[in-house]
Image (spheres, rainbow, N blue to C red):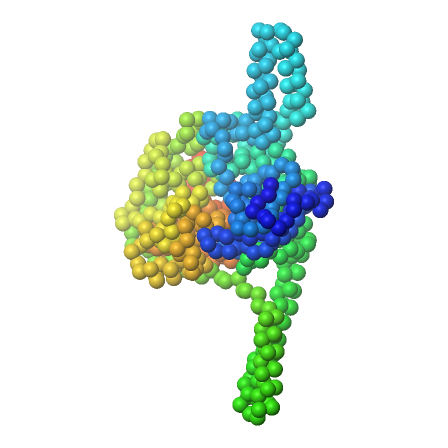
Length: 545
């Protein structure tokens, strides 16, 4: 695949390479996020792509996958490609089973259907032509691993945390987290030469993460992965590409080794920048003094000024310190004693019921954690409470003066074609400077306010959705995996802000540190709907549920 290049011939340096990138430039919403980047990826390489939220990691993956065009440069791929974006949408009919969709990664679903059709023809037509077509199709199916394909697909799905009985269900009845697992399983099953993964551990429990680490480490494919899951990066990768301020810098080794090397480099660069700044200041003062003295000294001063100009041209910039996210949720309006009450809620999607007879109350100021395995109905429950979907049975009611804010893990409320600032105005009639200040507290600064929200990265969309909650001044928050896609500083800042907020929360999260910071009082176990008091021992299973 070649992209917008006039300067570079499509020549492979070595047959082991699966990806070559030369002088790549990428713009997002008229903002240059990558300039003049060049790198190669060879078969078997495991590359971690790291950087702060909004640095351009997702945009780079989209360009490498051929989904977006770069502004300039060359991208050349060899072999087959598998790409799992942050929020993958299965490219299949809702009625197709999860297993069939996974098998489609190698085309085995169509091959199996073709073989079955030829077998039916053979039952009524015993001609040599039909027999030959069946024999050829059967041999091709065998050589492509068709007979072992189903067991391989089920093994991968199970490794990623899909229950065996859920694999046989239609995609339309699976939860959002399960559909993401199916799409990841499809790409892993496809045995591609190059795999691009954007936050693949979102919504995976600890066992599934461990399985994925082993799979990536042992797989022959080259992998480029974006992840804020530092354990995954350390366990699986051999190289790091750091993207910041439009520059891509390569580091060899594990994520831990990258951190050590980057810390040393930042220390050296900071010291060099300090020495250069001091020398430029010393020479500038000296030249300014001499300029006002004798003619001879004025000529010397002119030479010194030229030296200052040369030093400025060679001057390095001190590394940017990662800005801490400092968010403050305003005190909520006063509400009644009971913030929300649910009575015998049930939900089904045409197949088996996801849950039934779920009843509970949440009192003012309480924090209720909803726990359960994937597919247990956690997101379905929050969508019902947010009036995004209707229950199959049962009902719920909001308490007196309850104002509900909903954070959806799929970012359904963030729409392309609408600016970031316009999204904020939907929640508040505050002045623009107030809304910009609020966005700034989530590190959404400058021209981002006028940017199309559909062009934001996953982490930036998360920050915008949380900023909308703050602007809405609610007293009851429904939070469905609010820390997914956030970089570590942002995750810490959001957790601290919510921990200090005195309002009512119903939370779904696989993030033990986030849950520990919020200190929930009650826990609702799904799908059985059992309500109990929170105990610290449950932190050990938060990532599993």
